[in-house]
Length: 252
Figure (tube, rainbow, N blue to C red):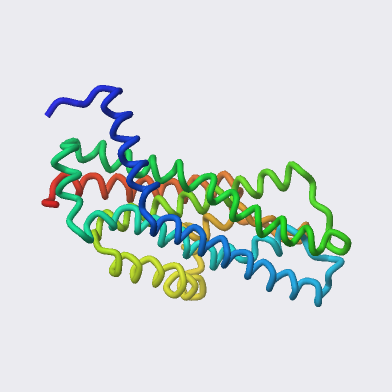
């Protein structure tokens, strides 16, 4: 089968972006995640105000919800790739776009286009709320540190979404993908940190932690933000590659 032209690839990207933009579950997931993040930010800020307020960082408190916030982006990635299988729309997609590898790649690219601004807005909203509530008591932050941290948080949530989309494409069903990913991020990974401490920094969630979480001066950062980014990107690209390979070889 011949490779499509650049114009065709652009049309495929536009079609995938249109499908995601017109999918109500995408926006419901993002809205729910945004609201949940604000509620968690309010809770963590309230706890911070009752504690040692003078020694706490706005970034640490504002991003304390990331461990829970990632669940919304995991769901987002799964919905993006599994939604077409639910009603059998995938057959229409493959009949219209026979280049399977390119079609799935463009779906991930379209998902990236949606996720990056959404991740930035949601992560920044928690930090902004904390800043408004604690600006008179918490440790001040430098603008370059703020930018790097929010960029790292945005990158982590985006890569987590793409990784989840790849798992969704491999499993093709929403519920098994949710069980696998939520079970890993919230049960298996936290347990493995105690039993397999040597390997914990190479897991996608722990490596991604170092992309955004600022540490105090008396803490040692085991991985640099670039190392954490590299490890998480390797996990994500490997799973996307596997998803594309299986997608091209099996039946719809």
